[in-house]
Image 1 (cartoon, rainbow, N blue to C red):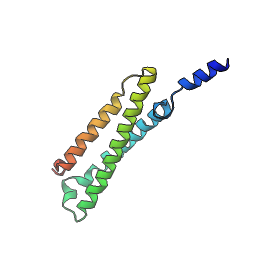
Image 2 (cartoon, one colour):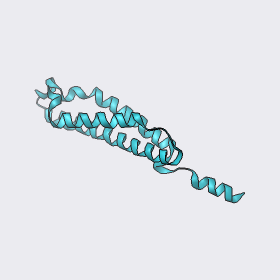
Image 3 (cartoon, one colour):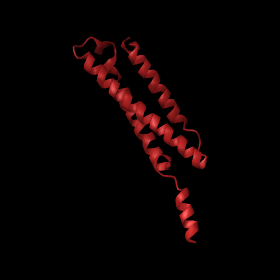
Image 4 (cartoon, rainbow, N blue to C red):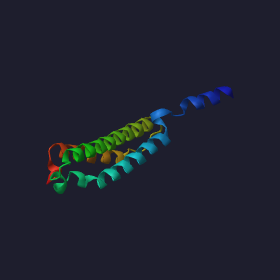
Length: 114
């Protein structure tokens, strides 16, 4: 009986593989993406003409990098979980990483100033 319990404990996912941690990261990445979308006007056409445009740019860049980091961590966590129990692919996390990367490239190329 003790062997079965220890085997069950060993199979239990922990750290990045745990379901609650992956879900927490996914929720946090979605919320930070929502916040980032609300701050897009900081780097828009009207914001570029202000005296504090550089501060706006770096603020938006920090929020974007936070969103990207959380989305990548959520994706890694969900993929690790998938190895353990065959969970479905984390499509939401994949899409969020892709959109964040697209926004990062657009920001660095100056395409958000249009």
